[in-house]
Image (cartoon, rainbow, N blue to C red; front, side):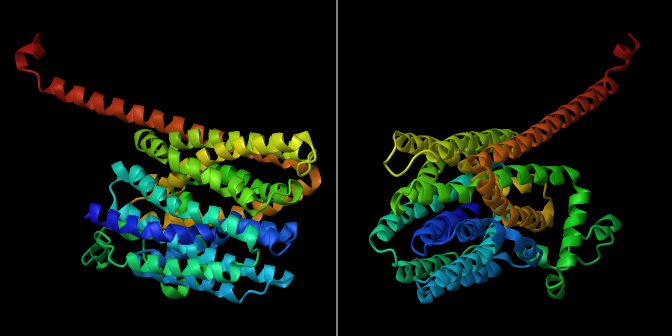
Length: 462
């Protein structure tokens, strides 16, 4: 059954990956920067939308608890496609740029629901011991679909800057085809879990309401959902610390993603194709190549040690992209020997960023399952993705403000945050190893005690 579902998702993601690649914030950020001559603020808004649209994921996670996942995934995906189809009516004016930004934001809001539903489906359909490798293979297929689109999009918009009015709706139609392909997916044990648990008198289970289904009215009263989120974090302090470490790493990355677009398009004055290649294409190609390696590492060492290695890659990317931004501040488009050096250093930084994204693509989607139990996976994913939205709502704008004040120094601040996150992950990994060693010693001591009790009487007397 897992194999059948895997094949269906594989075919779906071949097409859906093309659609998802289109609404990534960095692609749309280059388009809004050059086609709509957008301000730095609008560029920041568009590049931040993939992150801060996730702020509503806690609501999506609450909606998914003890409800059928596939119909909700398809409904959210259809809403996302509808938003992209509406780009056909966007005028090519300065106000049209804000309208375009709103359409991308709304599509990402619904896409965050698709991501939350898909993670819950993966937890149910695929075994833990192979989940990292299965996730990597699905991400490879999704990335393969987005790479030709990013490259072709850059070349197309270099020739026709206003082609968005037909190009976005065309790719939106492909997204609709991808949704139709996933209809045959089956969710293992879903009907059993939805059935009422008659005669359940276990007071401990009745007292734990974290996995209970939310009523629909409670979804429009977000304080009820937030209260359950706070209870979940208080009940699981290790998951709370894991989320804090992710907050540091994620904020560091989001602080500079818009700065990279500004430096490449407005300081180095690169075109659509060159900007898209450095911002999106190069990292995706590296991500594609490195996914199998990261997947094997994830299944072998677990999420916490995995996150330590992954955080080191994020830190390396910040170092080299920051150096590239420093060199770019003294260069102009071909008018300085620093221009080529700045582009080369940026390229190396984006290569390391792709390596980091490769590991992040696995850990971000299924890392929370290391802590989630039974029917709490949807709630934990909602918490994790909503915190992503919270940092997306703040970090890019803080990064823009710092860039205006201290220029390339924003990368130094981001690097400090990344190192804090790396340290938190390292502490969690050490604590888990100590607990595992303690548990193993306890099991060994109990086994030794049983062996002594089972000795023949004459040996005991001797």
